[in-house]
Image (cartoon, rainbow over all chains, first blue to last red):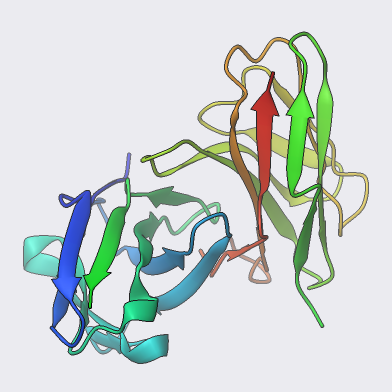
Amino acid sequence: AQSVTQPDIHITVSEGASLELRCNYSYGATPYLFWYVQSPGQGLQLLLKYFSGDTLVQGIKGFEAEFKRSQSSFNLRKPSVHWSDAAEYFCAVGANAGNMLTFGGGTRLMVKP
Amino acid sequence: DGGITQSPKYLFRKEGQNVTLSCEQNLNHDAMYWYRQDPGQGLRLIYYSQIVNDFQKGDIAEGYSVSREKKESFPLTVTSAQKNPTAFYLCASNIRTSGSYRTDTQYFGPGTRLTVL
C-alpha cells in the first residue's frame, strides 16, 4: 500500500525567505506525485504534479518540486515566500491503477512579516 | 465556467438525523470522490465512483452512503450510524484516461462543513 509522510506539521518563515516543504512517499512502482494548497475553509488547489520525465517540476505561484527516487522524496520549494502563501500544503501520491490518491497529513505554513 | 460545486457550504445536523451533501461537476469527468478532512489531518477517502451506477468504498465508508445516477452528480449521505460526523467534506473529480485507469489530476470543490449539534 502507498503512503505519504509530511514530517513538518507547522513551519514559520519570514516573508522573502526561501521555503522547502518535505514530502516522503512509499510506493512500489513509479509514483504519480502531487502538491496541493488549501486556504482556510476552502477546497484544494493543484500547485504542481509529477508523472514522468524531468524530475524538477515547475508549478503555479512560483513553486517547484523535485522528485528524487533514491530518497523517495518530492519536496516543494519556493525561493521567496509571500504573505499570501500562508496556507496548508498537502503532498499526495497516486497509483497507476484506479486513480486513487493517498494524502499526507499536511504542513501548515505561516509567514512572518 | 467549468468546475465543481458543493452545497451547502455549512450544514448543521442533530444527532440521529441523516443529511445529504451535494456535489455537482460540469467538467465532464468520469470519476468522482468524497473525502473527509478533520482538523490537523490529511484527507481520507470515503467513497469513489469511476463510472455512472458504480461506486466503491474507500478507507472510511462506515456510516456513509452514496449514489451515482448521473455523470455530473455524486451526493453523499451521512447517516446516523456515523459516530463522529463533524468534519469538513470535500468532493473531487477527474477524467479517466480512455482505456486505462492511469492516475490523473483530481480537482476539488470548495467543501461542506458539517457540524453535529
